[in-house]
Length: 577
Ligand SMILES: Nc1ncnc2c1ncn2[C@@H]1O[C@H](COP(=O)(O)OP(=O)(O)OP(=O)(O)O)[C@@H](O)[C@H]1O
Image (cartoon, rainbow, N blue to C red):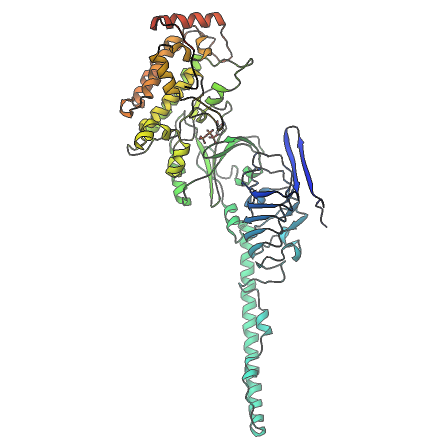
């Protein structure tokens, strides 16, 4: 029975603000797909893109655990069938027919499957003998030239299951039999009968041996399948790999299937891949980062690098909990930081309801980040490029109690220089711009930029998300100092705090030294930390971020400090430089 809607159809259904159905059937869609196109639509239950001309790889559906109905039939999809289908526990309808899918059939085991069709593709290899797949008849697999084994009865597999040719073959002795005169023929016929009998006996013996071997190998294959959920294709090879734990969690605590089944929420698209907040069935929350654009590392190389990351243990570094490696998927698993990132704390929710970001909190975050960076630098080889490499405010996460946790450290060896140049902050440093070199001091420079963002509340061009224009803070602040309108650069929330400005100016001084154009002029992280730890917190105890200041105190406080530095009046600032 074909339950698919028969007509051209466009329908998008939502529940609340989440899309649950996407039907774009027979409307002439074309173009290539992005494998991750559906990753943020985590509530999807139905996708129907049938009868279009869509090409490219099949969508990955790791983050669409509720999917019940998937119809991509009659398009030009190619590549292998995504192993992510294995995690769709509620899948009922799967229509992939009439595409160019190749590779092997994946071992679907979902008992929920009610309709299934992969016919008219280029699939090959044995159909995995799972009860779910065996329950569909030959027409679901037809016209895949390389697909073999039951239930595709037309072609049996070459590994010993096909013996039809042997039984149908002609007796070669018959064709060789000579035409002789009658006298000789009786003798020859007798001998021939004998020869035929010998050949027949040999064939019977050979067929029996073959059947025994075949049954033995079939049993072996079935037991392998039930033990390990193994199949022959590369997709299933990847799906049977397990999650490697390297942090607090132990193997067996949860596994890749739990992650695939869990509800997921997109946190954002970073330069190394998308991040998802994943809530396991038992309520634990984790973050899964899908890495992309990586160098072609072997699993051993990748594992070695992950272990070195896990060895970097520091209270201000986000610990890595585990990773997943397969040919087509590399995932990092880490803790979820409930207070999100420093970027969001500084720039998020600027408006009426914003809780002011107090100076003491800013200073203590600056200290924590400096400690983490010093730790990374102390444990790195001098020859290493920037040990963090991508320090920016979105990579400084805030734990429950506001403790900063620096993330995305040490990823440089996983990507090519071309990718690093486009994505990592250390490659935006003046030394890379001028001399194409990056080193420890490039991290110091990135740290200076973070300090300037903390102090000014302005969005730096390095941390600005795609499509948002930030400013080149080092140049902007340097100009402000040179032209004596420094006061304008401080975040209005800091200016509102009585007694903060002395520390703010000291931190500004450190920040500007970190941002020196010449790397050798920048301080080492040890010196930076020493200086920042020397800056005292303000005495006021309404410093928790729930407190606020009033407008009068902000101006008096600021002017008194500014008065000590300069008599020049404040001029307005051109943000666009
Ligand atoms: N463990 C985590 N807990 C909470 N939020 C996180 C966590 N990891 C990442 N995020 C948030 O998810 C979003 C995407 O992060 P991601 O690291 O992928 O990109 P990014 O930091 O914006 O850029 P980049 O890839 O260059 O580091 C960011 O807003 C980040 O702050």
